[in-house]
Amino acid sequence: MKKFNKEKIKKIHFIAVCGTGMGALACMLKDMGYEITGSDSKIYPPMSDFLQSKKIIINDGFKREHLLYMPDLVVIGNAVTKDNAEVLSVKELGLNYCSMPEALNRFLAFDKKAIVIAGTHGKTTIASIMAWVLYKAGLDPSFMIGGIVKDFSNNYRLGSGEYIVIEGDEYDTAFFDKGAKFFHYLPHIAILTGIEFDHADIFRDIDHVKNVFKKFISNINKNSSLIAYDNNKNIDEILSTTICRILRYGQKKESFWNIDNICIKPPYTIFEIYKGGTFFLKVKTRLKGEYNLLNALCVVAAADELKILPEKIKLGLETFSGIVRRQDIVGEKNGITVMDDFAHHPTAVYETLRGVKPFVGNGRLIAVFEPRTNSSMRNVFQDVYPKSFEFADMICIRTPALIGKIPEKERFSSEKLVSDLLTAGYDAKHFKDTESIINFLKKTAVKGDLILVMSNGGFDNIHARLLDIL
Image 1 (cartoon, helix red, strand yellow):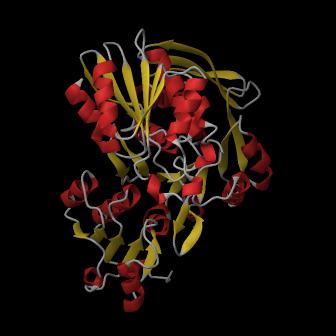
Image 2: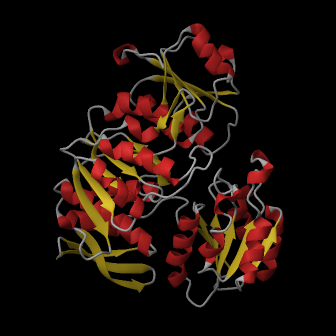
Image 3: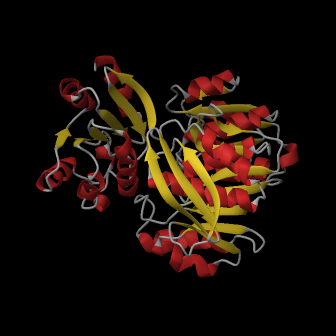
């Protein structure tokens, strides 16, 4: 990674520009007045349309000629390898280059107070709620988030205020920087939601994961604050490595921030928030599930640290509309609801189903699951997944479409998962492709059912296709 003078940068090229984070950063820098180009091997909507609406030139494929106009800086995404044709040309032409997190820090976060959301689960939801609370409080925040925030119809924003909200990802930065992405950010406030094993393609075991988070919190300034979940032993084991102010949140009475008196009245959940043992707020929200109430709670703790008044925090929470692909109702047809969710880790699958179940009413909760991540397609969670579907009335499991990417001995088996679920007494079925699931649900789903589709990918546009045929 070459050092570069930011003041001399005018033209920036993005390699792998269609990634969620890369595309957002490209648009932010375009809005700041930089000349932006990009390239990618798979150019398709919605990101391609979004980039083109910003008049950003997108090149199809990775080719040396895309760099011959000699950009002042090249931002290299972590989806590409050192053998990429444009990466090789960057070095040959002697161009300045950096990673996406470094560019975000150097161009946007360096002069703002960063609120960094870290942890295995909940980052996108918490970052979205945090950005909306700041906005409703009149603080005009900037943010870059891994999902489309419905209230902004966007996953990024350039604000004039002093705060920026960033998802702190523990995944590695780039082929030339194997450190975690969140190492590039200096939090004014950090939120840590929990530490579990994930990303089996880069982490050896849970100790490897913990060491990365340990390094992250040990770098937090003593004048900053860490808001940490109170019911995760992996967090407990690393907290002694930080010198900053620590606030615990959760449902333990002894924690500084906790929730109590949860009441579900579909479509709302009503709950009370306590600070230091004293009543702080009563909130009504459309967020579903206990884990989402905890997501809201840590935002309340962060907002209070920023001296935002309770009534403004309440306004933000109660008007928050949600995030695309997080318990997102895609549509309803003949009394059958189709919901989309990003859940893929066993804990996320469990908590999503648990959270949605009380809102289904007398109908069935039908879980449709596609293992698609590098972790879920590996057998590391093979024996854990059966416990994740406890709250589903019917379970449809697809064979991973990309299973061929995983070494044969490491592969997850959808067939075994379904067999284990059947043995445990669940109504579960295995499908080799998406078409089979759609045909099955066309015959099986009835009025009152909620079909919850869980995948971190497009799942062959199953949501719209279901609504077409139900």
